[in-house]
Length: 313
Image 1 (cartoon, helix red, strand yellow):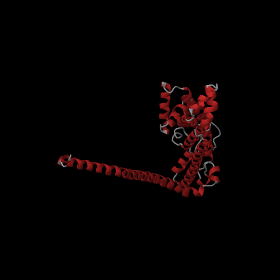
Image 2 (cartoon, rainbow, N blue to C red):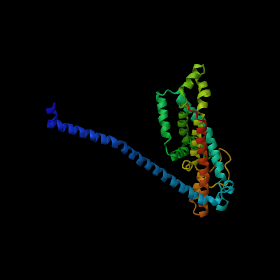
Image 3 (cartoon, helix red, strand yellow):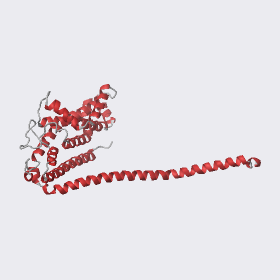
Image 4 (tube, rainbow, N blue to C red):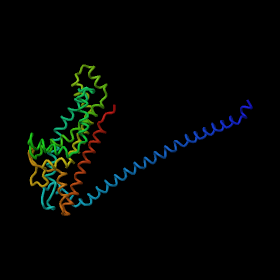
């Protein structure tokens, strides 16, 4: 035994093994430290990205506030369109936007929720029809908005529907634009209802429709309402789809119905931005603030509604 311990080969092997253990232990002790450094660097980069984005947003909003402050008064909301900057306002654009969004809401709620119910509650998840519809809905949600404007021009404003350049044409086009969002959000809301709710209702003798109407939909309403509000807020801010549809940027009347000519808030602001006079630039900045306040209010209400009424299963 003593001769084996004194063997030079055995001694070198023992030294090598001890060195390897030491290196391994050092590497293991340094690993958590390297992970902490990497996590800190990554978190710092994320924080920097958020700070840059918020700084840019704050600069744009601050610039609009400073420029538009002189025109942020009740006259901005009550005056109609005018070639004179001192007399120009957003009344016609606001009324046109209200008409458009009212019809969009009227269309997207039954169509979007109905499609979501069919896909989640009735259609087989493995059927070719359900898979095809689901893939196409996801793809349609990513289509540029100008494509919907050209679609509305070709098939709604002109033949086969031939409605012309009216409020209803803009409403149908914007409905096609935001409908995939409503369907996707409604499906998620319906899917979040636990299967035990459905199973318990069916076990008590309720039909599938009674289960959906009295159990599933009431539980999913907060999520569905949130999706509808977010879809409407997107529709309000869209400009590109309305340009091919002949939306006027200078109207001397207030839109009066679904078959009336119209303008909208983003189009009116777009028209003011194009004008060379500084007074119109001030009007455009004030209009931007009005739109921002409207969109922030709608999104905030959607978030409050979700947090207030969303059920925790």
